[in-house]
Length: 105
Image (cartoon, rainbow, N blue to C red; front, top):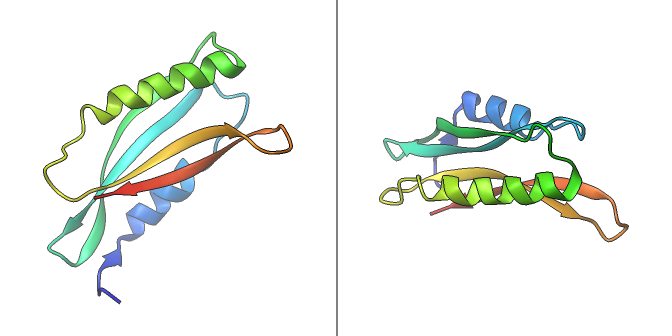
């Protein structure tokens, strides 16, 4: 073990972040975490929320993907971070679903 702990606020935010209702037009885009004092992963910020009013189905997901790409351009790449991002896809059985992906460096 590395001895680095995860702050409770990170877990609370993650659990709220992964919930999404299929009919919702507002999607929490991504949030970031940092390592504080080489000991603890702490919540940094929620970068943005995607507002997809008036968009349906594939158009909504395409617009969301473009929105996320723009958010990546604003991130600080000069220090280690964790990014939690919601990714939408069509499963093998044809149903639309989503997963939360963690990217870190």
